[in-house]
Length: 223
Image (cartoon, rainbow, N blue to C red):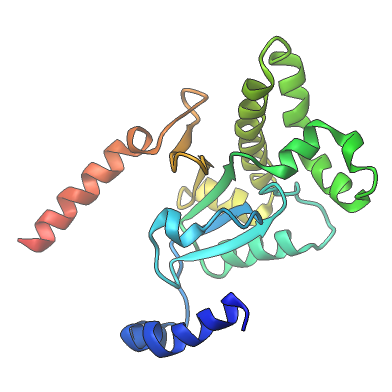
């Protein structure tokens, strides 16, 4: 039996019984905290990274954690964003890139994608990030250029998100927050984009104020 099929058996016999109440609640609907857009890469395990339970993240995955700018063309990403923002009313959207991203390596070397026409076209949505790296990071090492691309691609996709009408409306109302993250597979580190400083900071530093407020709130509830 394949490992993942054996995992289903274990889930049904060992995991589900301990979370039966949660799944019964989820069967009546969902109210996720965030739309989490990340890469399809099998090494990016969203629940493990964020330590979330089922029902807490509305997840969209694709090669390169890309958000196409809004057009009249209906695609899976556009429809999912619209539903998450307009119907589920998620208060947060996270675009999460990661190190060792094959999509971004392909974006930097489009000639390597000649036999993958659909991949090549899809990665065109990262072209502005590639252009920035080739212009600004021309004297940097290949490793530094790739890190820059991973970060610039996340920022670019955040900009693309703002072109979606439902996102633009919620941002104008002030009840939606966008986040740009970069996950390091080897170290486990997560950095988050600080728009005011135009740089990525360790997630602990980036969200210090929010985490302090959460700790205070939890302490008051415990009291």
